[in-house]
Length: 308
Ligand code: HSE
Image (tube, rainbow, N blue to C red; front, side):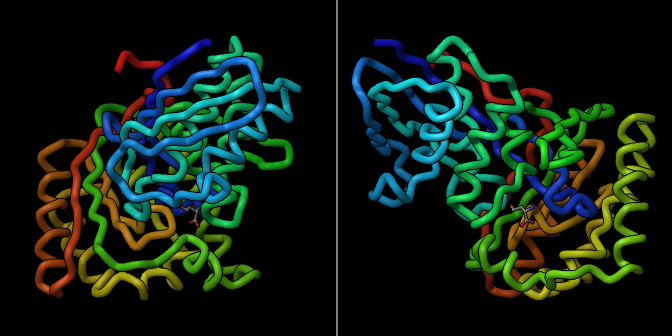
């Protein structure tokens, strides 16, 4: 029998302009799985995280990830997974991706790493598909690879790890409002208006240029979303007013985190992120909405083996 403990970080998808094609990994917050393999053919998943998850293994994102790994590598084994730590589902920081990325990375390590990093992401995307009804990698890729990742293309998967200039911090607030990723995707129109598309690809180019050149101002003003936000911001009471306050307090950008309803602010100093976090808290408290909030550093490290 072989056994590993794996950590995969929380992540924030879209980064404003990069709907389905950009995401970043966060420091320290994430999922921990204990995984082992032995002779046989099967999968058990035991949840010891204290976070409620579906009992049915077919509804757990880890199951399709392990199946995809076995399919790609032609292996068979009895795989036993214990979920030790888990980000609360619906928190807006890639809860399903953290489990999917940890499972994909861990199973690959247990078999001597036969898959490339991109193939590990492909396996993790199976979990995302189960959770949200779509094969997007903007949480899964940063959760596996760390840092800020651009998905240049999906067919075939083409991943580019972008530089993170300096120390970036995110304030994230998860309002206790229920909006599933499936629902947040279903309200988006199937076609994009040309004017919005022009704004969006200008911003994607600006964001990539800003990250490579270390131009923090360019990073901030490029993190604007003309495609999904106009539809999704309706889930977040007072969204425009909140953004104005957060930007005035010194953050570089404020956006919906992934498909929402969580919001995040990006700042180039921990203090500024803390300030944004306070504004977030006051905003939702004033509306009688409960929340969880965090201030976390953007991390260059993705899924990894840990001592537990
Ligand atoms: N890119 C996905 C979406 C992320 O916006 O629907 C889901 O977290």
